[in-house]
Image (tube, rainbow, N blue to C red; front, side):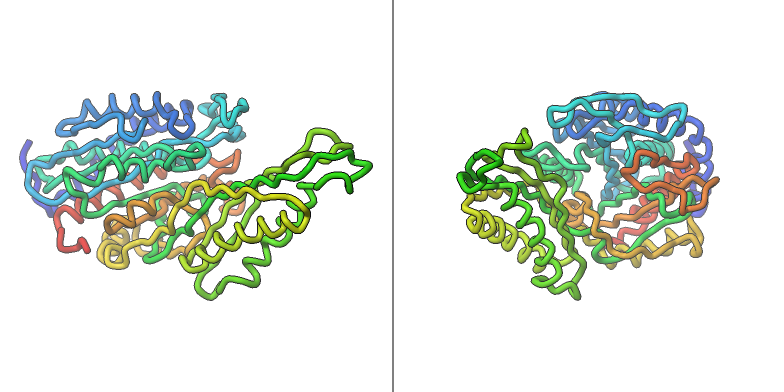
Length: 422
């Protein structure tokens, strides 16, 4: 293949992206119909592996971090390496979109049978990364350096006691050999339309800590509560007090914080005070000092409240995701490329979110940029577009082609201009 001059390379990316559109939709729909939960993405991983192995110049390493994939597109010219992250896992949610290719998959989760669906857009993220790999593999004679594709499992959270997907992949050396100089992450978002991009510098996502509390009391008959120690009353008192940690003990001028109790249960019969009760909660913070205060005080408060009611509290800390911090320099250096591909009026500056994202582990290692591409159905007003994780969440397929072109241009820009790397 004749080497393409750099002045025409961007036009070639556009042409190749458009020619891949129909195949990309087929890939997206297959992935949508075959969702898998964290660290169970076996069929998904094998599908991606098989596809990548057919692309010229792509080296595939599988499995990585149990079910993930690291693929390296080797350009024909020397240069640096940059990476693309695409998350693979789905959620234990019943899809209610009514789409002809909707998921009907059922799996076991936490010991219960559940429906499984891609209601966060990871199927789209994979399709876009595969599109970028396809486009750039056809231009490898013009590519300087390498593109590393990280198809990551378990972004939505790993089973208790296991590391999340990003941390697992980093521990297995995915940012080494070649040495990755920057990581880019694109994710579907239904607060804007295909063709639009949401990006910002600095903090994008809050840290997250999962905390599990077991309150141990003493069983008694419901008619004689004084003969036992009631863990449900102790737990209820704790739940009410947790919110005062946010309103009274952390400096919210430094950044938002939120505590959410996701479950609280105990007992089995209406007239029995149970021996114990369990709750699980998340703590999110956009400021590290606030996070440290909250995590420490939750443990102290749980033990104090339990003791006040004659009970004991056992506090177990689960997964921790640090806050994600976008590189300020990378943001400013790539903003002209984003504006060129999307047009300035379609580039939206979004506020820091109290959501969490384990992409943060990459941003702690190398300069990184996490951004959203619009995926809301174009035939509906945004007010009717359902958010990520909602049973009716859906990705407009027009988003796939646009985001592939954006991702491809960003990669080429960095490889052609390594001085833009921090």
